[in-house]
Length: 119
Figure 1 (cartoon, rainbow, N blue to C red):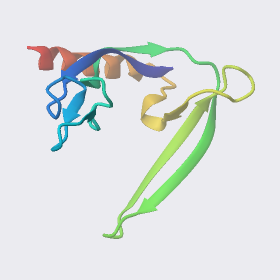
Figure 2 (cartoon, one colour):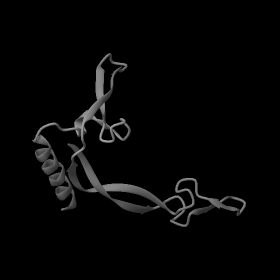
Figure 3 (cartoon, rainbow, N blue to C red):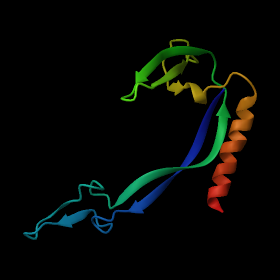
Figure 4 (tube, one colour):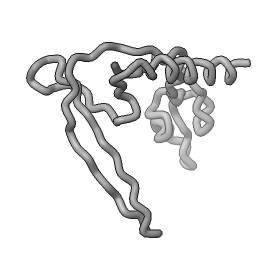
């Protein structure tokens, strides 16, 4: 099982161009806003619901360890879902791949966080 979230797009008006998509230079020339790419809005994605999905067999892709400037080691393991049989598809971090029923508790916990933020 893998845990995924459904998301909704949140459009935030660009503060640099006042949501116009253009900025005016000192000489009066109007040019595309470099912050919003001439769109007038910045897009963010907000989770609305966490869910699970069955995925087929799981193949380990990589394990990496990084030593930071304090000498502390951080490691991660990534997996690819081999549902296609050829090993193509998305790569998932270990904390998003579940092999037992504890994924239900994690989905409930994440959904409770969303509900709490909305209150």
